[in-house]
Length: 403
Image 1 (cartoon, helix red, strand yellow):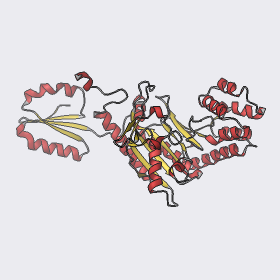
Image 2: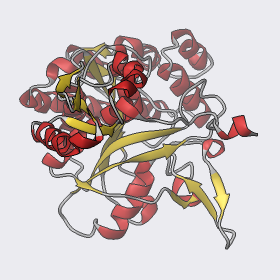
Image 3: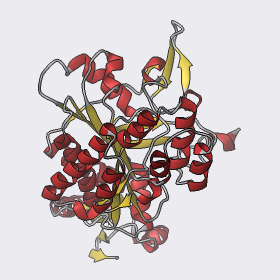
Image 4: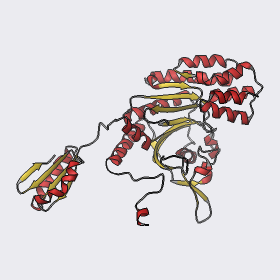
């Protein structure tokens, strides 16, 4: 029992020391960035009524949500995803004005899954939501901010892939595909399974042109030039053509932002959920096979809370971002120095002045009392670990710099 008390449950962990300091530094830098773009912070409850995260609202399957009951037998849930809660709060407090609403949040989310294969079940997420503006300008602002978040974190080599869910939906609507076929196609196109896509269309009665286009999704990946080819394939399908035109307009806006070198287009970027209704995007970099940022337009979500407003947003998992920075050996260039002041009882006043001076210079400084120099042997291990940039020892003999 004693050993168990020292361990955390599977999927959660303690964070401390330099790792926690680096995490907090990154969080503060990113919060300052999004605030500079006019995003107001919001803090929603850690748990909500389970209905807030139902399948037609959230992106997390019910079986992966931590659920429990309160004293009145209401079903509650730890939030697996910030967006539904932020949408609920925005609908309640902010969306009666004509002006769009910009919200940001930073906190913990929880996923109850046994299939995470060593991944954390509790993570820290930073997210932004831009509500009440259906324009391509809002799409561009959000994607630019996603790029700026990654640049500020220290990443230099990454790509942000952009798609539009309407392109695929327009094709399916035009071909009058049934729900089961759409589900099968979505899964195979999403997983880049070309042969699975062929099988899904094998017994479907559609024109050769539509069949060829649905089989061509792997070709619609690359720079802005792929958009012209994709547009040609759907020139007689207004819904899909409008989706491509929006991506082309979006690219022009992002060129003005100056972030085009980070962009790739992927019309086969589909979600297994109907959560996203238009522009979707993900950011990828070395050190992980998963997207470091996920986002998109979800214009139907706010209807669930009584407000018919457009919305777009994204989230980044801070823990994953830190892991990537570590794997890419990217150091925090603004990391503060650390010093330790050791002192004997009679040098308390001098040690206090030394520590104050170091702190005023921008160095984090700890003070530790030792009885005399003989006790220094107990600190040799600490000094050998290089936990501090500098260690000072103040005694009757004066001041020594030990490292």
